[in-house]
Length: 304
Image (cartoon, rainbow, N blue to C red; front, side, top):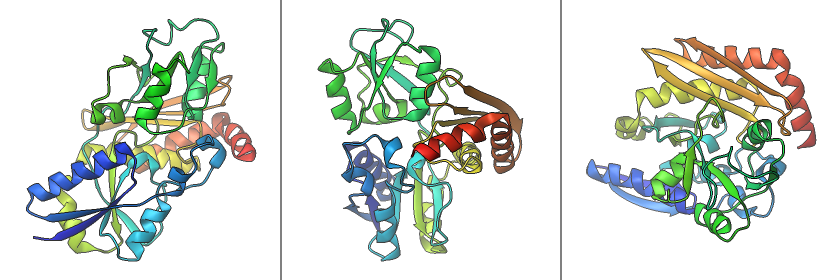
């Protein structure tokens, strides 16, 4: 049996994720130690993510620890991992996926539709903001950073009428008390890879890859690979108004892709089916670019 060193961010959710993987590895008979690593994204807490615009802002320092052989594997929320990894790294496993959808949380209101005119909604995601504004142009969208507890506390304190969070994080932390609505993917397309964990290792580390093979989920691998191919085609990271949601339907993959203007005035959606995850993701990405996604993204990247 092996001794494995895991690198992880220190947030409450990242800690849960790392402990979850540690438990699965210990159940296989391995010994595990955990190293908490503070990333650039963890240090910048007072600026909306879309304004930071650094690819790998939640992964760079962890990857440095991999290169320096201080850890053997890193546990990431897959949506934080850049779509193009440096040649030094590979994704050894993508775990069984939690619910990838977004959820509407509120103390007083049951759904987005029930919010009063000009209600105050918290999110730092341009993707969520764009889709909210498309549904309800009257809403006032305000930045929301911090860990899950901080965000929920701000909601309960009355700083916001509602906030939008990922279902997966709340489910994992068992903090679903304020979830009023699971938002359908057709209404709010999730971020590429949302709900899945990516286990990153040094490229070519066959021993560790073999030990982690049992964690790899075929359906999660196929759907997230498809979503990330779309994101890569559009040149995006997790801070841009791009959504991707893939499902396996009768052995084929169905992909819903989205590019939207941050103010919600233009929302481009495209749905296609295919057998090859990468080809399907690239195809939907190309269609969205041709339909005007290129102009939207140029403007967003220009502002960033």
